[in-house]
Image (cartoon, rainbow, N blue to C red; front, side, top):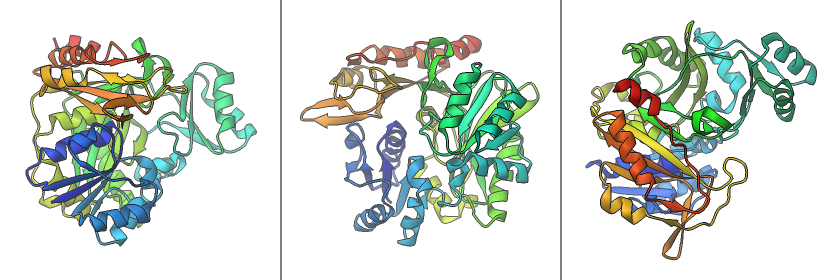
Length: 418
């Protein structure tokens, strides 16, 4: 099978790495890719937002499957363009991707499907914003209705900060604060059958101890030793299957990766948000644990034949990923800095620890930073403590001027597991 992956971040590197290890994959392409992905896939230049260009490239490469990684191309309808060219595509249609593209649409689907979530108001005027903030009180949860690359949500006890963020959005969702730990659960679906993956937890705040601004994610781990063993079954029954059924009922079937961001509250599981693609950095740890070869699962989902796929199998290993971010992330990150130590990790830590590239590019013989989140250092081990130790040993070999990373990824969970 010839597979083309669209995107150029660490999520796409994780997908390409898994696909490159799949014996069914005879050719692997990525567009536009990055410096790390170039080691496992053939790179092609393309604008991921240009559906016609992506479809033309897929036809030219005689691709048997296209996998669209990031959310913006999905919301823009790139998967529709690929399917219109007669090529199977893993990723929802433009209509179904509104589940991530619009918080208000997602709330409407959840209400219709009776999916448990936070109470919320959709606001478009300053008066509505003030009423909603007053109704819920602190801590305030304010979400830009549209796509904001993981940075459109503000959770704060400061009314002025909450109000300023709300006023800066054209349309905003203000909702009640959900207490309790957060869990990310991915499911692969063809619009009818739903196949859940293993849950993971990510770390959104920039600094240790969950301090600092929200980011796209600074690290993740899986499995969750503290979670109820019945969690996946419960979320399947109350969240994932009803949502897929409701979207099909509306004539906008969702085929691809449905990502549920969940809060395990004192009143039970609640959906914080849906995403329409693999999450970053959770994908890095979930795929590190997946034993089933990936390509056939994604192709079955794209072809509507997921019921033919046997149950997924998983490694017993735990996985931890630590994000190395550039200077001044998540504000205005500095780019163009040389990255050193990658060869040392490859020589001394692989295969139990390895580096997935996010914001990188080649400058001659040197790999340099090209974004806010630069690398995802991922490791596996017999338990979280060992995976964590291996990940941070590898992180210690990387040299990137002014870079930052959290030192407490999975620390608490590893302690609980021990």
